[in-house]
Length: 179
Image (cartoon, rainbow, N blue to C red):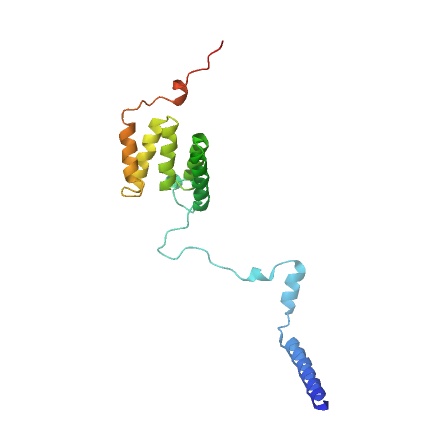
């Protein structure tokens, strides 16, 4: 037991020596560092980094470049697009085609080349009587996935819609009769 106590005391003494040595190993700030910090300057001011592009490389975007061909960024979130398609499917099954159309259109806002959203939007627009828009979206689906899962259904939809009028839904709805 006494031996364990003695080993413990030796370990504690060595740890204390190591702490003292590590404190003396640290670099002491020079008088110039103390003076610059006292003035309120950062110690990193002495480090200068060259941010210019390498020789022969094009300058960074926006630096001496004609920006007339720069296009505006669009939001891109495939997860939100998938969720909107899922909710749109729910509305479509409930025969709430307006809500489904809205969700499918929102899915295309988040991911403009979402094939399923494009196809389902065409179906919803067809159900709402928006035949011109439905044709446009069936064709868009075929451009995205010409041999895709819904390619045959898109072709059938285009065939169905080829003789349909392009008038908006509101002009075909009869106003309620007053008695």
